[in-house]
Length: 344
Image 1 (cartoon, helix red, strand yellow):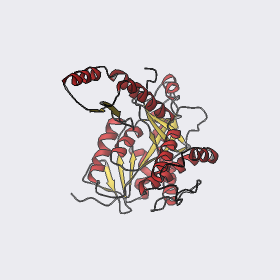
Image 2 (cartoon, rainbow, N blue to C red):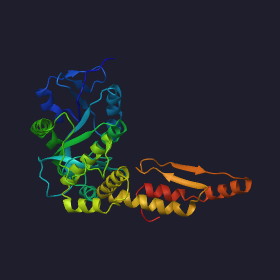
Image 3 (cartoon, rainbow, N blue to C red):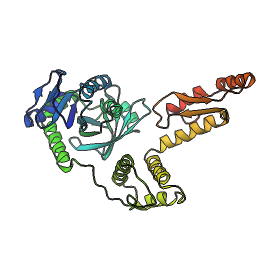
Image 4 (spheres, one colour):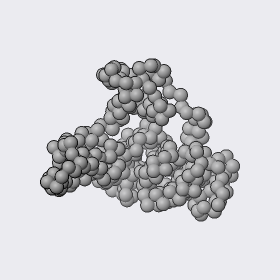
């Protein structure tokens, strides 16, 4: 089945959120799925439905059909609940970090507010208060969309409009009554965002002045990663002095490639201090169990719960010792750390 070429895939939970988009663009039904439309402007529109399961299955289907297209960006647009009193209903925000309820992994986007995806509708103030410790916004789909986008190696962004607060009376009625106005606001924000983007890679100010310096060496992938980190650095209002200090502490005797990788690692650690602590805990956890004949490695991205174990066997007696060592590996503690528990 042939597919229309797309540059952007717009994902909404409900049709009401997308109503202004259907009016602004000439979307035509697609044979791929009854909840998927495309138009000649290179846009696709997908109604995912509410909840993680639907987000996983529908987005996965569409991205699978378009897997050969080199450039395809995902936009999630829709309503979100406010978990903090200082946020105004009807205000529009780009999402910065996406957390999942009872999920360890988070996703870094480009935006101004964090969001947590809840497994169920947040109906009580008590549940909202609990989730507010993680983020000021809540929805039902974005974490699932981000998870699929990462697997497919596709960029994703999210624009949310605040519709309500947990415990508000007649939430569904209020959302339905305001869906037209909120959809128009989402359309305005999306078009503004699209106009500000260029088809080329974003040109960031190299505040360290190292991209073309002989003491550093950036591959194409590392350059893109560095520019992405610089943008996050500036959006989070981290100081230029702090970044200069981080770069200045890297051993100048390292080869340029190693210096570059070290800088990117340190910048990533600054964005995700929790993951940095968990990696350190895992290193400490396995250190007593390793030697020249037994090496244990875990996934540095913390996305996999599997371990890589390398063995060197020299004889029957030493093999028995390795068997004993394998049985003593702290696997329960390892899996507990991956669930976010730091005291193991």
